Length: 311
Ligand code: NAP
Image (tube, rainbow, N blue to C red; front, side, top):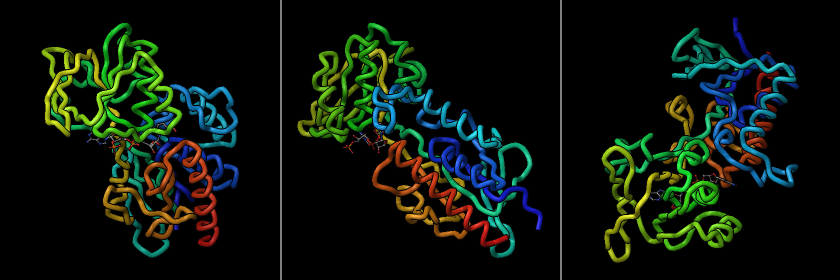
């Protein structure tokens, strides 16, 4: 049987890079496929305060770079390409074919799916038209463009509050619009956001439209209790309303939940023998860098043992 790789890891965020680190140290023949720069969502995180070992916190891009360097130090091979699909090869335990948007078909005895999650859209009027013209899904990328301006943040989770606090470094005022009267974000972020004089909250409200001729001018919000509609003046609006798992490439193969999160057990095994899943793409309680790295280590260990059993 001619198989190019023992393990192909798809996705180069913290889960994928940690899986790669472990697989390289286990001396397996491993390839990591990533469509962009390795780092995933960490690349656009300003400061990460809850990854152990960094008492002052660490800049997201720095952590991504160090993870990459660490795996590279042990001989990591990376292919920059977008995976378009994954197939089982003919016989049982024959392994998998990984199809790329461009380039040769890859073959692997086992796969580690570490494709993470993508930012949700609200799909409200004006959102698409004004994307890149004030509508943004990344505060770290676009926040510095709005120095001295008024901006809005939609959402009440960790990302929304962390980014609202980050945006106060530049913006004159940050209005957080959240659909309930209770925030989902962790308490320490809530305390900081409530104490920040530049942040205002519009609670129990949903954004229903984004208005602007060439650029964002206002966000139309509706109070969900009173149904009253009002407008929040903003030069930019950051849509931070959660994520959806990037599981499309294996959705027809492995079991997922109703949201598309891959079901994997404690050993990161999915419903298909030889396919492992780790990080934000899998169904789990806590989506953090620290849990993604733990998942990645386990996935690599499991894949390595799976491959050993085959050869
Ligand atoms: P999230 O935790 O899923 O929060 C999404 C927020 O958007 C929620 O407040 C939700 O409201 C709101 N929302 C969702 N759909 C909406 C809609 N259609 N209209 C209006 N509002 C809507 O997502 P996240 O904040 O991006 O975080 C993703 C994961 O990464 C989480 O597990 C989070 O803990 C983690 N994370 C951790 C850190 C950190 O530890 N420092 C930083 C960032 C992210 P409801 O609350 O009403 O559902």
